[in-house]
Length: 205
Image (tube, rainbow, N blue to C red; front, side, top):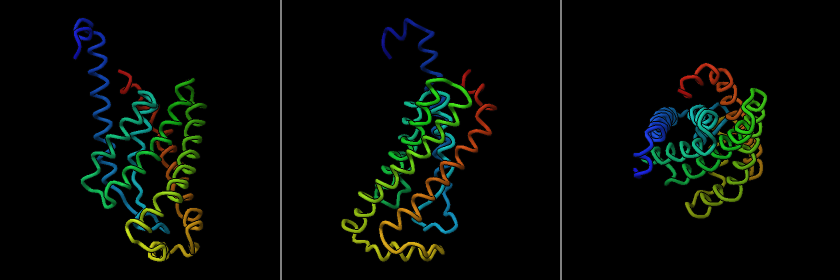
């Protein structure tokens, strides 16, 4: 801690509150991330969790940069349970940051309910587009070429979930990753819209 901070108790208290709130939100996000589960018609390698609720709340209440930092910490703390050598966590960080960062930036401009809804809609769109691009150009080729996992094996995993619309890489993006991220963004946004106003006073103390 710098001498300037020590000579300014108000700033020191603000920093301490920021660290405390960010830490609590990160811990809550980590717990929720570990409680992941598969969705109907979705392959088991694509797991759903509610941790983005907490990260989005952090972005709205403490700013988009804090939201991205909580997103980063959440994924770093999830690494001990990784099944992808950290690649999945990296993608989750980038995609999640697009969601909460976009939503937080729009809400920060003017903190109204309309902007919150607009931000969450834009964040959902950004997350869906970015997830599709990352998986198409990076993640799927990575597992096919580097990890030696044939596309046929990935398609069979999708078929085993009951989703028979997938037969190649493009249809995998269209019928798995697009609906998954749209659903995730809509569900997370709906829950945050319900709870944010109620818990916001606690986060602004």
